[in-house]
Amino acid sequence: MDATTVLSLVSALLADTSIFGAAKRAKLEALLAEKPPIGGMIVQLLALTPKFDWVNPEITDEHFPTVEPNLDGAQLEHYGKSMSSTAVLADFKSRGRRAATAAETLLYGIMNPEEQRKYWIVGLGQVWLYPGIGDYVVVLDEHDRERYASLYAFARDWYASYRFLSFPQ
Image (cartoon, rainbow, N blue to C red):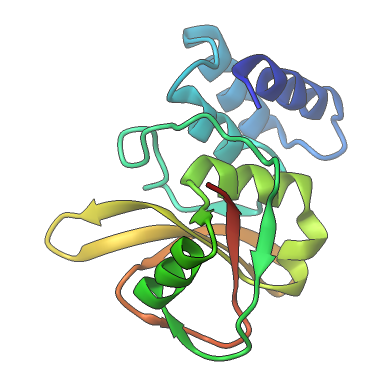
């Protein structure tokens, strides 16, 4: 998906006043006026859309440099057992798959809100080193029917109920 398509998606969301609060609309309009949505702006645009009730403020272009998102061949992988991040990535590699970037994970959540309500969705394809703490990845989660774009530690075992977003290599 190119920047023009993302801008069209965001513009359509802005037009629907029933789903977009005034504060978020003003912030997004200021961001669009400041810099057109190219390159690194995709992560910010996706994070600011009204489809998420909360976005971790550390999900930024600085922390997750944009690789242009492309949802062709997107697949939610479910293992039915606890898995480490490295085990999931090794399985992806053995099957010719790759993990989703931050932008792809966010875009998938925007385009598939009901999937996020059913499962927590992990994007292992882009890691941010939180200074002094460790590596973090974008996770789409849900709490009390509210949709979150969160960060969780990469070095962990993920519960059996989690799904991992992958794409063909």
